[in-house]
Image 1: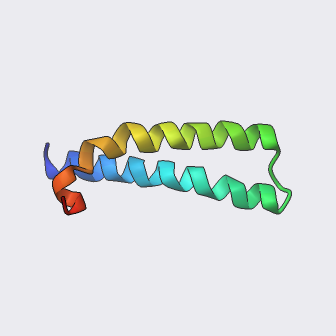
Image 2 (image 1 turned 180 degrees about the vertical axis):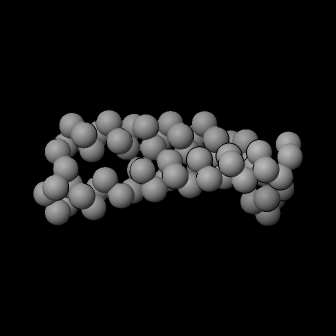
Length: 63
């Protein structure tokens, strides 16, 4: 995989991770409904797990 492709995949991964975390802050402050929250964390989870597996390898985890 080329460096540019890996950077794009990492960007998507970290965006998904942020999309899994940030809506919780907005729900806590009352500016986001629970239904929207559930949809956003689902999209974020799918983004993270579908792309992180491509660049996080066992040798990067110290195994």
